[in-house]
Image (cartoon, chains in turn brown, orange):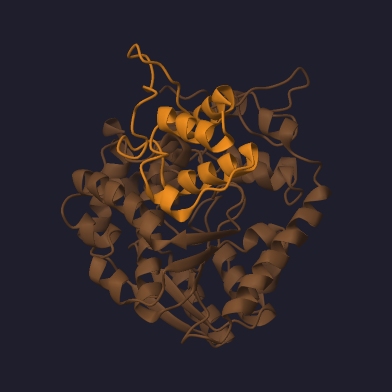
Length: 345
Length: 82
């Protein structure tokens, strides 16, 4: 796809969603179809209050019954740092922070991983998949249709592959350690609506996993079976039949400035080399550049538009973020590292 | 009912139905063709329960009843007694 200059794309007058976004339409006032269906921003406070009550019920039901109450998928970025802090301090949950080192965690983000978990007094696990596998996963994701169209509206193909690997690793750990809750730091637009709390039935999940593994092995090679799969033996020996997947940020309703202000008290510092839309990953800008070239919109636009729609970000701030499309010169080093030729994209 | 399910699947999975080769067949297996993922399936079940005021059991979720548009349409029609 030949991308339209990002500043010339028609956008929703309320939320910045572009006309290039799949399935979107505009009314006579320039309001996108998602904003037409959304309640006014102030009503989201009430919605988030109800979501918090749902979360509190789940936390109360499971607190103190296993070695850990919750596994937190912790990237060291601002959202998962805030999630970890809130679950530990506000909700008093015993957290296990787990990070997947994809080989592209910025130096400052690596410091943040240590300082945040140390400040909170939380156990911390780091898992590093083989770099050769990860590099190939990213390259293949950038050049091949791996994910559903719907998934690509929430994140770039490279991010989707990484997120799925991370999610699978969290489920494996939950089964191994009998932890009933897995928490992510995802915000609105990164995950489907209503995913503040999802109960994962392991039998249902097995069905999706078998189809997904076939696809991943086809694209990423035989090693994908272990990174994206869960053995029947592990499921069989775990007492868990269902796992609660929570995304508490959808219920918190805090602005980016407030998040950064609060986690700074733990010693967290913002990265300077991860672009406008990430606070941990050096590869993120490459994912954005590839997605924009292929699809004509910033892969972060859905979540940023949702932040504006729900009153957590100004439209001006959102525009600045979604119009920051890295040119190839900015991401060339990362592309070389994963063996990606821009002409293949 | 048919239109609501069709519209929901088309809008959320970003697909067009068509049996003349121009789109996704109504009989196409949504899982095997990689059109729906686990997030999408959880949303689909919630949509059907809410929109048609039906309950879908774990056994039904695990069966083949919701694997294609044609099967979903037939499953919901049976549930609502039409």
